[in-house]
Image (cartoon, rainbow, N blue to C red; front, side, top):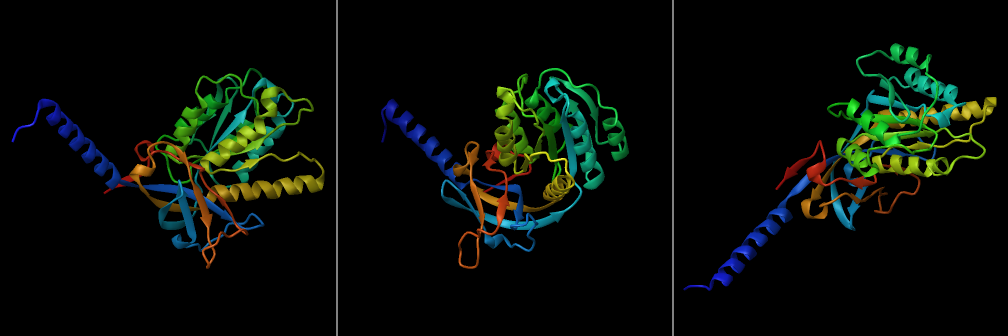
Length: 311
């Protein structure tokens, strides 16, 4: 039996398309996600089994294969804004950076930036060398290239390791980056690097860029599974005590977390998308007494490091 040429081509195209669809439908990937689960006091909740996590993408359930609690001193890049708009608060920025070096026992690197990278103390140096550099901060000047600084910080890690994070001390004004925000976001998600931020804003009349700073920093932190601090600075004794407590809770989130292994159907994750993660009680209802901190978007499996494709 013979077919007209057009019919033969149509059958071939249909067969190839069907084969690709079946292949894509049968492909799954496993993603490693870092998650904090906190009680009403902001304390880490331990002992949660994979079955209590409910993950969803487009309303479709994602299977949580494992939930491994981890407590380790990961690497952290302390990224300090020294642009001209931070003039007058550089001493506060230095104190914040020194505090995390001496209080959190993480492996620190330091990047000072404005519209370019001013100084770098990489992971080959000791924490004491980081502190010495902070004791001699250069003058604050120039515009602010936030996304360029974040891209540089991400590249400083080299091969990503579990728990890598960036601690950004920033006044909120971005006005000079050459790198696009979407590019930076995708890289952080792909490498599993979390962004923690401290909004250092004390101007009575902030610029337009600075006014949007707190919202921008929260978006970056939420996206990557980090946390944003935007405290009203209070230099009284009680205010300093409150800030010290907030900072200690922030450091705990960096070092104590769950590593979740997700199993995802390939056809659900063709592009970067938002997803939902909750902790359930014994009756299968969302636990409102707990807060889950996690990366709010997932990269496609093909763009993510630390993932595996399975059939």
